Structures are given as structure tokens and as C-alpha cells.
Image (cartoon, rainbow, N blue to C red):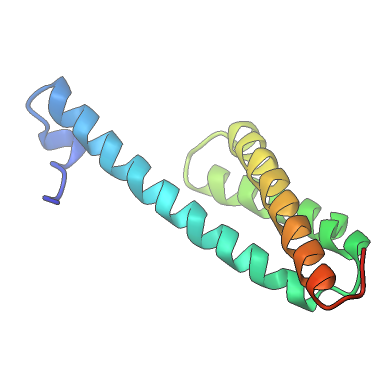
Length: 108
């Protein structure tokens, strides 16, 4: 796949949209990788309750807000995006934790 044209060099709206589509494809691939890490984390959790890790969620939301603001982006918007992403990741980690523990014969 060819590299998208840099934003300032785009000659028309089609090039702008192609660039955004390329970035969105990368974002989806990176989210998939993040979910793989989250699923792998389930094997280190000792209980289903430990999967949620509310203190970790709070720390993630805080740092992503800070990273966004340092990059000149809205901290509120980024926190909202990450709140949804982390919620999805926690549900995926719960599924993996339950699968691992059911397969070990320990139940939930």
C-alpha cells in the first residue's frame, strides 16, 4: 500500500480522505495489538475481580489525558475515547480469564 500524501501536500479532498483512512487502518491494527496484550494479562490475574483493576484504569485515563494535552489535543475527548477502549479491553480480559480458568477445571 503506498504511503499517504502528507496533509499539507494533499491536492484534493480524496487525498485527505485517503490519508485519514490509512491512519484509521493503523489505529485499528494497533488496537488489535493492545487487545492481545490485555488478553495475555489475564493469565497473571488471580481472580476475576482482579481483572478490572480500577486503580490501573484511573492511571491509564490520567496519563492518556496528559499525553493528549501535551500533543495539543483535547484531554476530555481522549479520556472519553480511552474510557471506551479500556472498557472493551476489560471485557475481553474477563472473557480470557474465564476461559483460562474454565479450561483449568477451576470454574469461575
